[in-house]
Length: 219
Image (cartoon, rainbow, N blue to C red; front, top):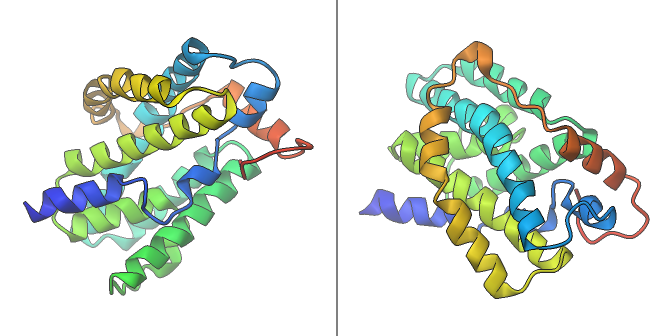
């Protein structure tokens, strides 16, 4: 029961990591009229779910989780750096590091002190994995938390930007969350050499967003 509650806490929109201050390129995609309605928002997110989530975030999260269990600092460092290399623009890398620092402050507030601080502050994915393993949460549980948190924060950004109504946003969460169990299963079958996701449109949108004149989001 306690592990289930910890899982809910990680997936909560109230987790103080600034999740709703980032759009991961969506703000520019809306400005460029690549994404203008609910259907296009769905397509935009599905592409990332089957690329970034399946071939990058979730497989690396699994390896970081196992490195924590094995107390393998060298492996943990390798996969944290690997994740940062997968962020295709300076804006996306900065977002990952800012989220990492915010998540580490969350851990500190709970009383967790760990010598891997220099790694944990680099990535929220790393912090998620470490926290989950430390609290004896299963890999599947921590992957569900990460995936749902990613999905919800992106849809909340779309609600503000496209814009979508709250009902449309909830419809998207309901529809796209049904894909997550299969994506998580596929992600856990990804071999080391196959880890890596390319999302050209997201990279272009993020690069353009860095110099977008008027914007609400930090990425």
